[in-house]
Length: 257
Image (cartoon, rainbow, N blue to C red):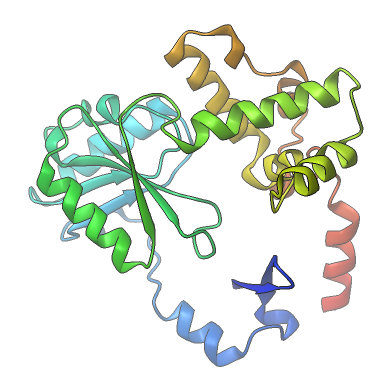
């Protein structure tokens, strides 16, 4: 199944080849540019490797250690992390000057922004090569120093966390919280709906990174966010988060039969 983004009436939508919402030729063309593999050794000759795995520093460091062994000595190792220190990830390698953060916004085909993060030892050559690659992708680049959460999530995640507090303390319903932020601040998506889209486990992980890295109790995750993650309510990818998507997904699956 291939999802490709488009816009209708100002809303982001994903078109599904199986539903006939995107032409087969266009879908096949997109798939033709992808090469899938589970063998890291195939990255041996890559000029740049962009890691986009689970948001866990320990797991990422383990991967970077392996990539450092496999990739050619001139290769740049980039991380799509949304909050974890690039300097600490780079410390797992023998090439800290060639390690950089390249944070794509979600979903990458739609969102125009890439946040580039320089670690303590990231070289100018690595920075300019990564910036040029992002611009070749048609992205707008912003640059952040290596502080917890960088730019976007330093601002976004506390807002999402506060929306959970508003729901947790009974200030308003989830629908009214999201509608208030959409129509009152012209956001395309409410913070609770956005959290479901990002993944509540990812939001929780980032809040923990902010709290630990910045040492301020204002970044403590809302108990309701913690409870939802503990319950496996991780958002759209699990069919339920703040909102329940299971009925809509069942209707969609039935329509394909």
